[in-house]
Image (cartoon, rainbow, N blue to C red; front, top):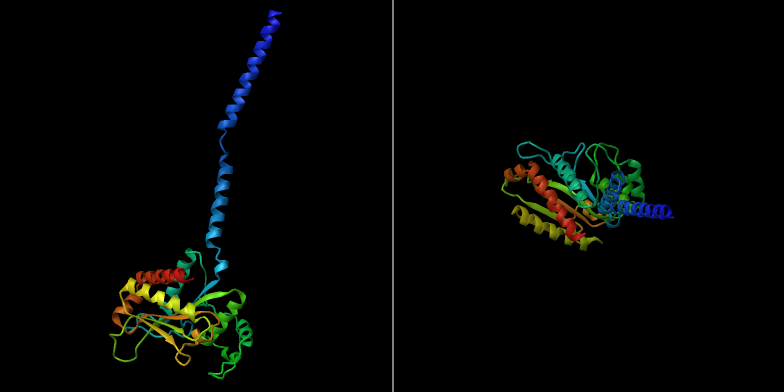
Length: 277
């Protein structure tokens, strides 16, 4: 009888010990390393997608002025062309805006132009512009130039696919006279455009940021229909043209050729985009 009682006591003790060990194991069991890594990767991916998925914002469409067989103006000393500067700044601006979560595209990369079929299709959807009395279908040319009219057709075609909330055309200024002292920024928009309110707000904000950042003069023009540029007048979205400096001025030319200046300029433009859109 005593042996039977001892056996029961030992069995009960063994069961209590096993339960305690199981409880400790459940409380201290670590998350497997692989599972933890997978969880982190999924969270990181989700975070990136959320931050950089800009579909609700629409597209910022950057147009590097000139390019291909059209170099634009040339620096006073021949050290660079306008197309080289506009393409460089456009590339930096695209990266800067993308890092801020914007969906940004370029009208061209200096090597490839939009397919002519796309431009013809876009032209068919535009009415004849009475002030120039030329059918938009005649805007498409078979050459190695991406004309201002073709840029309008491309921007409008892109806007029909995904809303473009800002079209920004980048250029470099030049004075043909001997007045090489003229320098600074110029910003233009078409005052009677349906999107003039947004274009005006962006232009004014950008002007203040440029003046504060570079301590240079900024000329802002609300152009009438006769004065307005083709790319700010016929595009379907708010459109602004930025002259980034004068290639005919020694100080401006030195800045335009500087990667540091180009980078700071791209950042300044991106801040203006953030503030307005």
